[in-house]
Image (cartoon, rainbow, N blue to C red):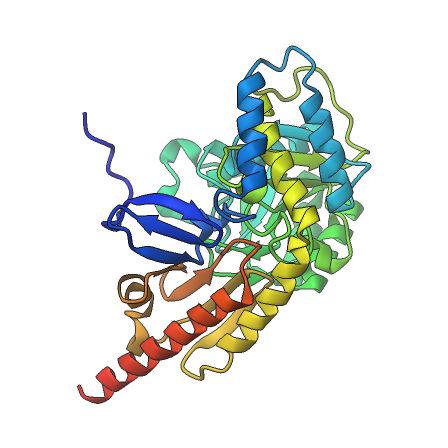
Length: 385
C-alpha cells in the first residue's frame, strides 16, 4: 500500500530531537525554528514531559469519558490558573480543527443562529465547518460549502460594523485568530478585537478566539487575544497544548451552560493526553516560558529589523513573520539545505518562525548569523546576474 500523496516532502528523516534541535538519519543536526507547525511548545523530548507521559502509560493510557478521570479536572485547574480564565469551563478533544468545530457548534446552540463571520486569509482547520470558515477555496470541498459564512476584511472595523448593522440578528458567532498563522502572521489590532467584543455583546453573538496556533503562551501572553484586554466567549486550543501529543480543547465562558450530549468525544481528554498537557503547563510555569517567549521573540524581531532587505517584520513573542523579496526567493530553501535551519512559510513569500517557547538567545543568534550570511550571498549572486 502507498501513502496518500498530499504533502510535498523534504528528503529528510528525523530520528532524534532535543530542545530546539533535531537530527536526521545521517546524523546531521538542525536548528528547529518551525516547531512542527507551532506544536513543540516546551522543546523536544523535555525530561519532565517524557517522564510524565511514560509514568501515565505505565498506569492507564485510555478509558472512555463514561468514567471519572481526575487528570481532566487537574488539567482544567492548571489551565485556568495559567491562562487567568479560572471561571471558564473546559471541553477536551483531539485537534485544532475539532476544537473550532465544537466552538462554532456551541455558539449556534447558544443563540440558535447560523451565520458566522470569519476573515480574509483565515485558517481554522480542514474539517466540515472549520474549513468552510477558512479563506482558501482550494481546500473547501463542495460538500463543505455553505452560505452561512461571511468573510470580511481583516482589521477592518467599518466593514465589521456594517455587517452587524445589516445582519446582526442572524449572526451566531465571530471567529478570529489573534494572529493569523497560515495567512501570513497578520496581527489582529487591539482595537479590532475590542470592536468584535463590543458588537458580539450588543447583538448577542458569540466571540470565538481561535488560539490554536497563536495561543498557549506563544506570544508572551497565554492567549494572543489578551493583548486587547477583553475576554472572548470561547477560546480554541490545540497545537502547543500537548507538545506533539494530539490534544485540543475549548474553554467556555461561565454564562454558557452545558447540557448532556451537547458535545462529545471518544478520545478527547484521555489519560495519556491529559498527562502530556499537564506536563506542558508544568514546564511552562516552572521555566517561565511565556516570559522567555516574549523576551526572545523581541530579541529576534529587533535582530530581523536590522536587515533592510527583509520587509514587514511582524509578530508577537515567538510567532514571527517577514516578507521575502523576489531577489531572496531561495532564502528559506538555503537556510534549510545550507545552514540546516527549519523555518515555516506562508504563500507566497512569507517566512514564519514558530520555535519552542524555550528557544535560547544563543539559538536566535545562530539563526540571525546564518540569515545574514545567506542574504549577503544571495544579494551578491543577484548583483552578478
